[in-house]
Length: 443
Ligand code: SAM
Ligand code: F3S
Image (cartoon, rainbow, N blue to C red):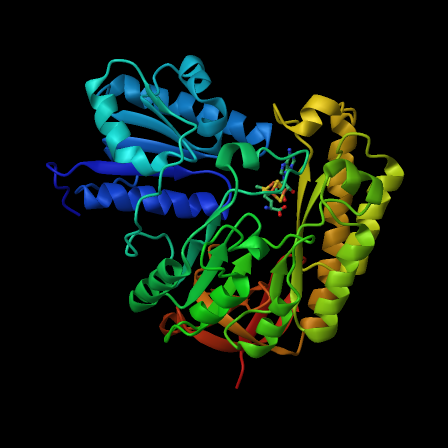
């Protein structure tokens, strides 16, 4: 490949959640519009952006160690602009520039819409340019800028109106702000015209979509409007909040064939005392009512979970409640996090982080093992059955195999052909491991 030396290039490193992947694509869109190309490595870049997460302390430490690496590079090429964006930038602001004085731009999760202006200001300034605490509209998306050819995320709302006592997101992303339904549908149409077949709608609490919209649109309307886009094959949405689930969404799942029967609905804990201290706004029983109703209506549907282990005051008995909830709900997948105290959250102010690290680690492992047992049991029942896969590409471990995802989010490897990439294929399951399945094309 010949390198056009006149063209400036952006290298973007994204940590954290799917919303960050999306926000990174928006920033890359802004730079593309300004004539920037993509730098595959920091060495080839004129601007390097690190889009960050603040949900756990570990995520922030990872960013600082990454910045340490980039510092060496900046030493060799001082003209390169280095920026930190996202939730950690929003939370820490100028503190980042103090700890990493070689950083040129700090743009919080609410002001990355100004990233081009901030980069221009950083070129003119001697010191770092810091922008936090301002709500700026995000850049317009250029749909050709995305990491996956056939699947795409779309943020339908930003921020969160809940105040879970452990969570830093309402502080870093602010209160919930929904996008106009018409602009979301336009983005789906543009993505589909550019080859996307599966869209995942993103919100911190997607059930609440529309609460602040003057036109009164809600998730139910949004799902119908997106589903109507010709050429779209699959539609998903995350993350559901157990206290806000709208029962009409199950009707939508039954009615709309492109809408996948998959819920990501974090319980966080199976203990009512812990849920109360977390201020989650539901009980274990209410949570399980939702799961049971979902299973009653969609026996082939799948539910994914998030758990926090070692929340302040969590006893062994509380933890056992999380283990039993995991078994009772039969999750397809569980994301398990050790509680990490986040500055300025209610939990940090009022509750002592009193579960020792080795206990958190042991509970984490225990829940992982429980999920493994549930997955093996589930995978066994899938052998011999045929599932619709969206074929994503060659398997990373074995290029002779192809990888796809079922509507319930199971990853399946099968010997296939490259002509199936981006297509829906029927695959019969033949074998499994705790995390993935193997299959053959159905005849
Ligand atoms: N909006 C989502 C919801 O409804 O719960 C969660 C957003 S949060 C970015 C993703 C996950 O990180 C949470 O579900 C929770 O399990 C975990 N998490 C959030 N704050 C945490 C903390 N202080 N320590 C450990 N895990 C945390
Ligand atoms: Fe955080 Fe709770 Fe909202 S986990 S993103 S405050 S629903």
